[in-house]
Length: 166
Image (cartoon, rainbow, N blue to C red; front, top):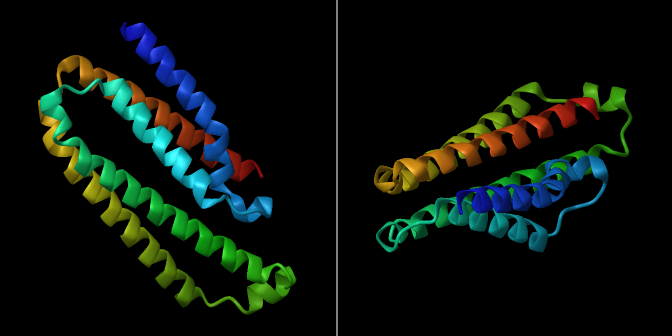
C-alpha cells in the first residue's frame, strides 16, 4: 500500500511539474499563466499532500487551517509574479541602457523587502497551521511528509537552476 501511495504521489508530482515550471517564469515566456492554471496547480499540490499523509478522521480537523494557509500563500505568490510580469512588460520597449539609467535602487530594495516580508508572513502562517497536525502524525506519516518535502525541494532547486540557465 505504501509503495502505491509513493508511486502515485510521485506520478502526480511529476505530472504537475511542467505546470509548475510554466508558472515560475511567465514574464520571460511572454505569456501569463491563467488564474485557472494557478488554482489547478494549488489543488493538485493540496490533494498530493493529503493523499500522501492519509490523515485519520481525528487529524482531519486540523486540515482546513493548513489548506487555507496553502491557498493564501499560492494566491500571494501569483500576485507577486503577476506584478513582476507587469513591471518587466512595461520595460520591454526600453533598451538595456535606458533601463539601467532609470533604475531606482532604493525603490527596488523597498519592493524586494516588501515581497520578502510577505513571503515570510505567509510561511509563518503555514508553519503555524501545520504545527498542531504535525504533533499528531504517526512516524510513518512523518516519513511520508519528509519524502514529499524532498520532492518539493528538489523541484524548487531544479526551477532555480532553470532560471539561471535561461
